[in-house]
Length: 177
Image 1 (tube, rainbow, N blue to C red):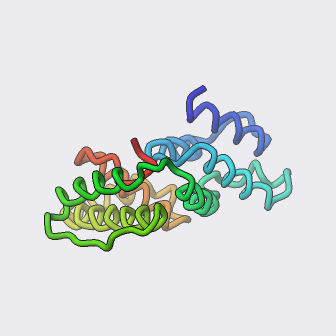
Image 2 (image 1 turned 120 degrees about the vertical axis):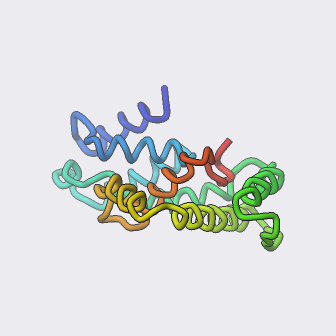
């Protein structure tokens, strides 16, 4: 079963709904494209919705579970494959193509620290790409994702993903293949 299909079935069961809203479907595609591990996403969503009584779950937008999903992803970093150092240096080379050869960062002591370094580099790349846009392009981009304006962190992540798509960058996370 595909990532999207498995999550869709899981969410419909938890929420007690018959279908996903377009915003929820968009959010699931975002999670898949960003390489969020399926078990971490499921656990984060489950944890978020269990805070609410069943009668309120169907009315809650799925993207509000993003904070819980991120927490679960960070915990999953510690359990990823042992080749994380090799992946880290490959991702660092990609970052250098966008930020210049002069970027320096400390040697990561563990996977979690490596992932944090890569996330910071992603944010730097996204900021440069965003700054290079015209005012009209910036307005258009923010408007495109305005349905997520209630969650600033997710809004920034969606914009970052869109900017990366424009330049053919998938992301730097250790989770991405």
